[in-house]
Image 1 (cartoon, one colour):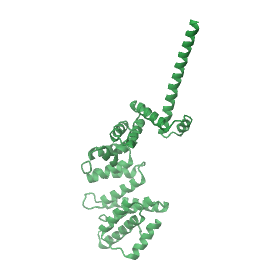
Image 2 (image 1 turned 180 degrees about the vertical axis):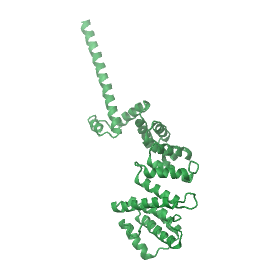
Image 3 (image 1 turned 60 degrees about the vertical axis):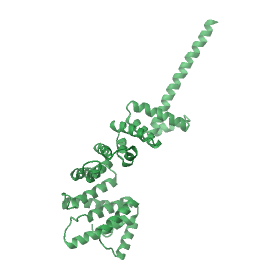
Image 4 (image 1 turned 180 degrees about the horizontal axis):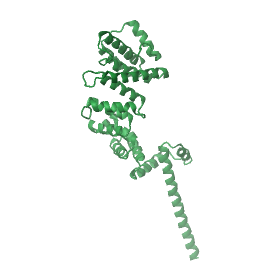
Amino acid sequence: MFIATLAVIIFVVVLALVVRKQNIENQKRVKELVFLSACGNEEAERALEKANLSPQEYSQLLEIALREKAENGSSVAARLLGTRFYTEGDFKQAYKWYRRAAEAGDLPAMHQLAEDRFAERCGMNPEESFKWKLYAANHGDGENMLYTATCLRVGHGVQKSIKEAVMWYERTCVCKSAPIWCVTDAHGCLGEIYGARDLGFFDPAKWQIHYNALKQMLRSASKQRSAVGYANAAYRLGCVCATSLARGTEATEQLKNKRRAAYLLTLAYETQESQILADLALERLKKLDYEIDDAAYRIWAEDAKNLNVSMIAL
């Protein structure tokens, strides 16, 4: 009787240990699926549907999985944990985990740390914010190549250096991963720098290169019916035309360039794709000191409405 009872007890204990082991293994498997689904793995998402997790269970498992993986050196997990805290409004913790991910080489985390809005919410000063922009730029982030150049151009968070700004603008222009709007802005800024006579970089030949690049971008956006690309290219090209006018200094050439700049800035304004861009275009138009007659303005506004480019023999 005693032996039989002992055997039953041993069996129950072993069974409990086996079940416990299976539960632990199942939990590990579910945690891994939760992590993979958070990374955008569709197969993991489909597998999780069978687990029937409640939103609360999913959230709890995700936090556990992210912390475990982040503590073990996963930069992706650290970044996702940072995003989780950022969404919850805990910017101190968000900064901690984004920084850990960035220092481990995670480019999206670098990009997040470099954002001005994030820097403001985390209490970063301009110098630290610039450091992360430069860090991301040096790791191939095209958007932050542009931001780095702009900070250097105006001296925000770093000592002003037009020479270094030019270098980063040039890198942005040839960066394959840079968004098209970044490339457009970089060409525009370089056109303004090479067209200005008071910065020490006046160079008509280089001005022409960036003018031609923007001209092609404007025509391409018009052909593709891209209102965003069209408005941005028109604005940047208008600013380049308005800057010191490297194509000539004679009165007739100056007037021709002013009219060209007025046309392009009108396209950017009338497209109304972005209120910020429209306001910038209107401000440059006012500074241009060129009077547009009503008939011409109606034609130009119609071009903007239809995303056409008809005036410039660009």
